Length: 386
Image (cartoon, rainbow, N blue to C red; front, side):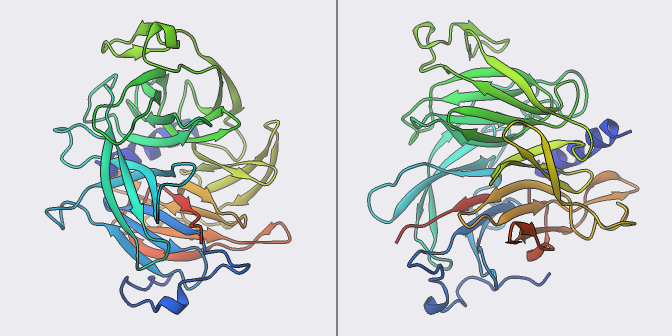
């Protein structure tokens, strides 16, 4: 189902606007995996592609490990995709929890967000085990309502977005807040918004929630401010019901923070920058930087002059998911959009994962971490602790 997601994102965005492979796991000597400098372990970049979950060292030579294998290739595997988010805080021992889109066997069971326990701190030594799942009701067809965004409020409540109807109408993508505990398959939630058109990535800063929306009439980046519901009851700020009968917030405070225009054709994902925000725009191959007050600052990635989208992707890719590590490096999942007789969408193994390194605050040309990938759509950055 992920190919259909990125295809219709690309098509709707067009309407709006009028690499060497990494080293396989198992071949990495332990002495090469410590990294960091200053006694810190190197950040690890996670990305779902072809319904697998891959992990990479964040610096050259970008060693790789497949952490979860798709069900199509492993009867015990899972289908993983979308934005990847690591729970704040630490768990006992050498473990950490994270969220990723998980739609194994959809629509029965329906797609949602898997809750996983991660073990290990280095490429070649990572293990992930599913311990729960977040599954809401969807406004439209469950076949079409793909999962994507994730994030956390400061007290540990979880946020997710699903893209909803991706091509027509006013949009019925959702922003949802979830309440602990999460290590189970039935988790309480309250919907904050059920009218986002092609909802995308989430960024949370100081309990302000920023959500990308890729197409009209809600195209842009939206900012939601609390207080947010604390339970799925009227006493917790969730007194309404949506058309599916699911809990809906009594009220929501939101505003259009960054509209589309200029470099920003189809806002798809958002990540922090030193001065504000990075925002990806997949259809025109752009990552733009905006300030804390929503002012445009600069474009850090765009196709070279004369480079056109066609039978081959832009040489710098079409960024969907993005993430930033503690050093300030920017990572993006390039879904490899092409134009063909079949329409606009990811080509056959034309995707990649790339890094933008900054020197004195200026972006260098992107480095390919992995290539010839099947529609990678999300990024997550994990900082292990020694």
